[in-house]
Amino acid sequence: RVQVMESGGGSVQAGGSLRLSCESETSVSTHRGNCMAWFRQAPGKGREGIATFHSDGITTYYADSWKSRFTMSQDNSKNTVYLQMSGLQPEDTAVYYCAADSLPVGVCSGRPSPTYFLNWGPGTQVTVSS
Image 1: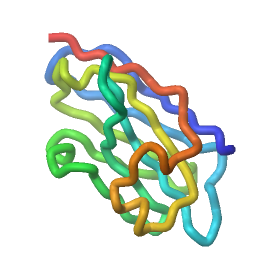
Image 2 (image 1 turned 60 degrees about the horizontal axis):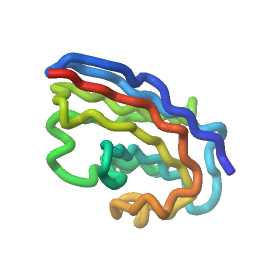
Image 3 (image 1 turned 60 degrees about the vertical axis):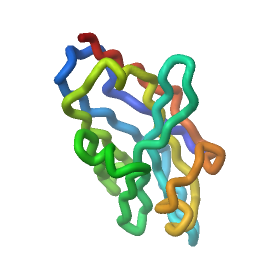
């Protein structure tokens, strides 16, 4: 297992911004490459995919609608990915999770379900008030 840890959550007013960070203990260096992902889970709802990044350099969003307010970026030297969130609304209130696993680029960029990932962080709470 690879240890994954999120940080950067908190409480903001509607319209505000937050930047989440996720560091993996080590790059899952296999011939398939490393895939890191952001998910979120609101109270009473299932886990929702936001974006993935594959070590081949491909970022994929689970829906185009994420791109207008959320941006996933990475620092390969630190095995770290980020999620910059802007224009936050109360409906963005959720626990945000980071996941990492060794996945081929075709799977990583194919919007994989949470079941593809074995390594998860504990999550970081984001609360947006109106």
